[in-house]
Structures are given as structure tokens and as C-alpha cells.
Length: 241
Image 1 (tube, one colour):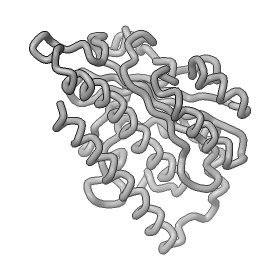
Image 2 (cartoon, one colour):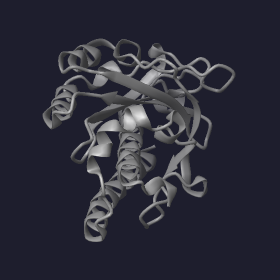
Image 3 (cartoon, one colour):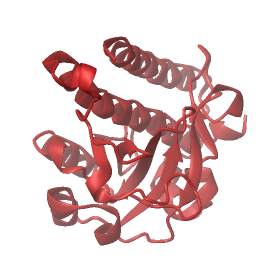
Image 4 (spheres, one colour):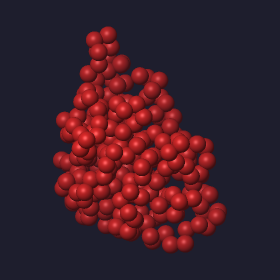
């Protein structure tokens, strides 16, 4: 489990490096003809473009984030509900509404093992760049509440996905100008196993229990960063290349 957690942090570091490289590359190539389009992505793009069929690694190059060949997450369904009150929960919802939350778009994904499900939420905020950062900063003290309302997708492994099964979460502000969004993610087990509830041989090992709990949050963070890069790609028009 410790190795798995370290691996997740390694992926997160690579994604961060990929984001910086992507911005440097895009600036050098001057590919952004209309950066203001970022503000309209949530309303102008088709739902299955915002939430692609698959999300994965960049394979060491720019692009390939939605290439099925490198997929780490596969989409199970997109929620028809787009209100803030349906997409977020508890203090996260209250914080987003205080900042003028306009909409919350959600989709549920599953990992390659078929054991982990995750609901990704795109939180749409007013154009003031400070609001997405304020929401992300406020969430730093609320990690344990889950943030996102899970979207249970009928007739899929996520059919039983519910709030009580949330094991990890993350909420970040999307990097870049004209991108008034935060990305929130919650993760859980398909079979409903709660974080830290390990088989007997590991259950009494405090390190194993802590590592198991932290791995769910790390998984959510990695997925949030992947989705952030995808939003950058949509702004650049890079997902069709």
C-alpha cells in the first residue's frame, strides 16, 4: 500500500511538470487565439467533451490525456443535474454558494481495476479569478467532508455509489486566466469498503491503516490534476489534436 501511495504522488508530480511544460509550449507556439473562450467551456462544450470517455497520462509528451491507450479512468456516466446544491455537499456547498456558484457539472469514472469509483465535479464560479482560489483555500480545512455528492450511475459498477461510501476527496482551482473553475473529486470503493477498514492481518497495523486512508485522498488529487489539465486542453483546443 505504501508503494501504491508513493506511486500516486509520483504521478501527481509528473502531471504538475506536464502542466508547466504545456503552458510553456503553448506560449512559445502562440496557440491561444481566444483565451476568453475558457469562460464559456462549461456552457458551450458538449458534456462528453467536458467529461471525456477516458482520462490518463500524457506518456511523457504533450497531449494523449484523453487517449484510450493511456487511460487510467473510464467514464461510467454524466449527471443530468447541474445545480450547485445537487453537486456539492455540506461546507463545500456553503462555501461555493457564498462565492456565487453558478453550476456544478459531474461525471463518475472507474479505474482499470474496477475497484475504485470517483465522481469529478466542475464547479463554475463567477469570472473573478480570486473566487476559485478562495474556494480551494477554504477546502484545505474541510478535507474530511467529501465535498462532492457522488453520482450513482444505474446499471454500472457505480450503481451503489453514495455519500457514506466516500473515502477520499480533493478540491483545486484550475490554473490559468479565463478559467473560472474549481475541480472537486471524491473517491470510493465499488464494494463499499471504507478507508482504513482492512483485513485482520493489516487492521492492527496503524501505518497500514493510515496509508490506506491517505491513498484515497492521493487518488482524488491525481484525478483532479488530470482533469485540470484537460480543462487547459479544452481552452487551447488541444483535445482534438
